[in-house]
Image 1: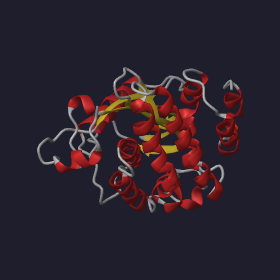
Image 2: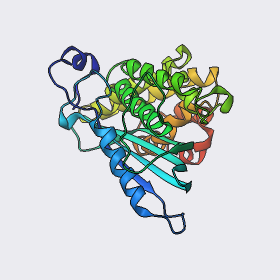
Image 3: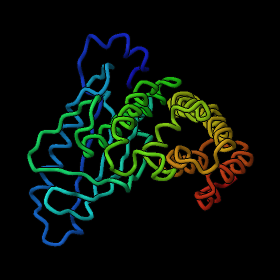
Image 4: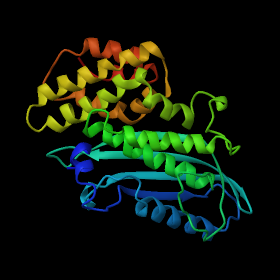
Length: 294
C-alpha cells in the first residue's frame, strides 16, 4: 500500500523512484495502408517516457507505482502530423485486498500532434516543445494528483499545480484543448476546476471514499459503506455550484459501476436518500442507479 503523500514527501530524498506504471497503446487500425512501424515506435517511446520520467519529488517503491494506461486512437496522419483521441485511466489498490479501484477515466478528443519517428521525448516544464509531450505530461500529473487525493486529504495539490503550469505554457501553441475558448470540457477546465475552492468538497470526497471507505472494508463493511455514502452525498455541494461539470462527470465515469456493486450487496442500509442525490448529481447514470435494489 502506498504511504500517504506527507510521509512520502518527508523521505523524498532517500529514494529516486518513478511514480507511474503506465501501459501505452497506440491504435491505427482505422487507417488504410498505414505504416505500422511508426506507431509501434511511438508506443514504445511513450511508454519509456512516462515510466522513466521523474514527475515529482515524491518517492515511490516499485510496488507503489500508480497503475495507469493511455490508449491513443490515431484517426488520421500525414507525414509527421497526427490526429487522435486519448483515453486515460488509472487505479489504486485497496488495503487488505486484491481489488484495485478505478480513479481516473477520461477521454480527450482534442489530441493532435507532430511526431517524427525515433525523436527523443524530453519534458521541459518551462517551455512548450511538443503537443505530444505536453498532453501526456499533463495527464501524468493529473494521474498523480488524483491518486494523491485518495491517500491524503487534498494530497494532489502539487501535481495539479504542475499540470496548470503545462496548461499555461501550452496556451499559445495553437493546439486545441488548452484554452477556455475551446469549450468548457477540456484540459484547461479539468485542472482549473480541480484546484478551485468550489471543488474542494469533491477532492475531500475522494479521500473519504477511498481511505475512510474502501480501505476499511476488510474490517467493518457496514461502517465503510456509510463513509462512502457520506462522501458521495457531499458531491452535491459541487453540483449545486456548477451542475454537469467536467470533474464530477470524470468521477462518475470511473466510479459508477463500482458504486452500483458496493450498494447492491453486503450489509443492508438506508440508501433511498443516496439514490435521490445520485440522480441529481449524475443523471447520465440514471439507469445504473435504478439497478441498485433498496
